[in-house]
Image 1: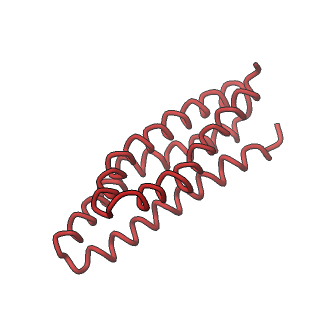
Image 2: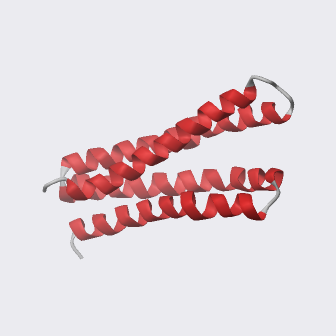
Length: 138
């Protein structure tokens, strides 16, 4: 298998797992579990999800930079940076806002919604970037 094919496979696996998490895992958890349990479960799952995305996108970056195309490597690196930001910065702020909301802080609910929306938009942008890689000429 050549590097281009490996990169297509890896970016497809990452994009597919992201899409599966968004359209199948998260909604199913909220349907199957009470809200508090669903929140706790997803809270423990999200760090793993973001780490998976970070590792996969770093692997894609390495393959793309050394064997495919620098622009594709740059796109993969951006996806990795966004995963790192989500895992190591955004996630902690989302969790703090949710905790404050549960404790009755009236302003925390709005902050949680804003941070959650930021997370969703980042995830959507990453998906579009991963799909777009396949349209970059090499």
